[in-house]
Length: 259
Image (cartoon, rainbow, N blue to C red; front, top):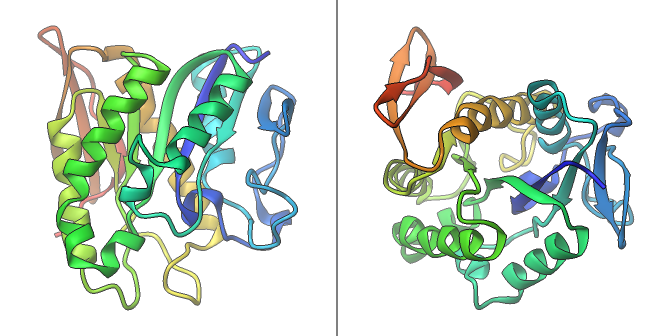
């Protein structure tokens, strides 16, 4: 049983669409993934290996980064992402959410964080885009009710998409959510390269995004509850300084500032 468990939630970019699989991060016997009612050594794809669409995603480099941070004997990942889902599909009354919670409870262990990479589907429709932060807030409340009141949550802001007219609104909504909800941080992905379809990232981008998730999770975990995030820019990197109980941590570099 892993000492700490992390939930990977969102849509296809969390599942990963990077190929070849051989280009992914190497396995570590201390990093596990929950598959079919049992823990296995984690390796890409972290989604269902029977689905040929699943490839390299951000989960492996996130997990390896957390291992380095925690010095844990074992860390577990529960992959809950579902391709093509809008934030409405993640509402606590919907099956996507309930199936995720069922998986996490079946896996057991202490949930020490949730990373959430989603929003591309919402960028196709104005109503979905403009209500992303509000709907995500209900997801945050539900996760904290079902998985722990102090669980840190890191969201990934969507990248530069081809053919999604409301993507800028979704990015604004995601930044608003990170600034509004306690214990929620955000990483940026606008500087990362997309693959040929203009929606899914390249392998190297997924690996970088996973590392950013780990870098953002660390200071958030040490400070939450009672955490607020102050966004600053240092050089070409976007920094999040975590402030809690009157003390400010050293800013954590988690993405580039984008004008």
